[in-house]
Image (cartoon, rainbow, N blue to C red; front, side):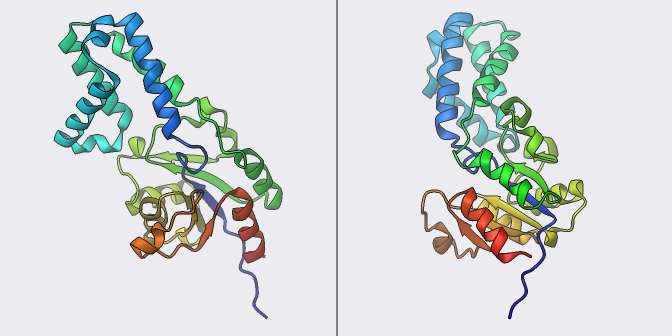
Length: 239
């Protein structure tokens, strides 16, 4: 008879598209920002569109790929260029960025997330919970920071998933060895493969029923559709 393995000492989560859908949030945030530009920077709104601002950012990213580490910094640089081109006051860019950040953090967690985070602590109150993200979500602004002991972000660390360094940094902050941590994320390559190569176990949060793991030859330690299945896996495979 097999013996269940001990609970992991830490469980780390990706944020965007793992705890909430990010595409609709960014779309709404860009629309809200453009409405702000119409009111407060009309010359920019008169010479650019949401699409042309996005294309300008992509062009800038192609020239300076280091912006991959901080998409907020990329957006700020794009706005500075647009404001300069339109003859608008550059000081307004920080106000525009603050407006965008508020809208970007107006996320709607998947319906299983809040109850799942609470149940996780009920199942094992000693497990350390953290997050690792390549994005710019602010857990405090979102109202979820109390669930996470540490939050490691690419733009703060200067390295992004799938680089092993970002996973190892989170483990160091929590004081756990990589083999004692489980990482949960929606991206097969950035999250699952990246975490496994850093020595963590990795759970694929596959909410869409994708078969991308077969396409890329990645073998997650578990595949779950939601928090309920994640917690069931943790309960049934750990003592």
